[in-house]
Amino acid sequence: ETGVTQTPRHLVMGMTNKKSLKCEQHLGHNAMYWYKQSAKKPLELMFVYNFKEQTENNSVPSRFSPECPNSSHLFLHLHTLQPEDSALYLCASSQISNSGNTIYFGEGSWLTVV
Amino acid sequence: GEDVEQSLFLSVREGDSSVINCTYTDSSSTYLYWYKQEPGAGLQLLTYIFSNMDMKQDQRLTVLLNKKDKHLSLRIADTQTGDSAIYFCAESMDSSYKLIFGSGTRLLVRP
Image (cartoon, rainbow over all chains, first blue to last red; front, side, top):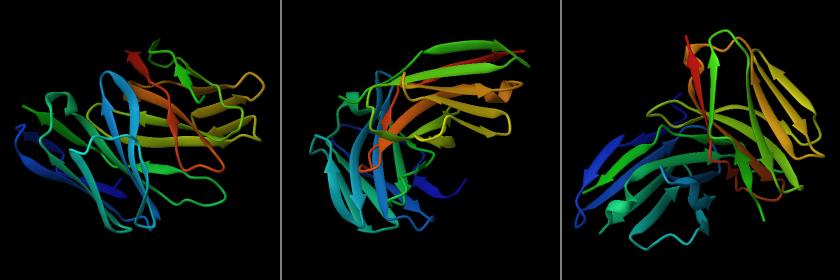
């Protein structure tokens, strides 16, 4: 499945580093998402972009900064993270329409903050 | 509020049927989904059902929806070791792009 591609697949960063996660969707969808998956909590929606406009910021700390330059690409810029931010970060896309919103996920980026 | 609940763990023998259950609270849910997550991977969409349907079958997968009880189930026939994974139930509403996920059910298939 290559509809939604995420890089890197694995990332280890120190608390003072700045890094970015990248996501690209090849499905022609109009919406893209960042989700966080950690061992302790259910899947958490972080950000939603609909036609490149951010429509949802789910009380995410400012050390996570999303960027959506076009409807096919989505970034998550990371800076001064904490060890508790270690998790699997999942990008997803969908075609929002009147007949539903089926979301397709990428393989995820495993982030470890040391 | 919106809430989706699943049991945490299910163990079955290879060749048996597996039934994974899910309950949700929002009666205005329009679509209900099942996703599969294998170790180290993202979520793979397995199937979904529209709320005006009672049942949907796709090869070895059968989805049953009891809208009155707000209960969704996924039946996997002839379960194989490759079916071992975490299965997530999710709901969405017609007017919303948000999916509300359950915590996932870990399915272990014993040889």
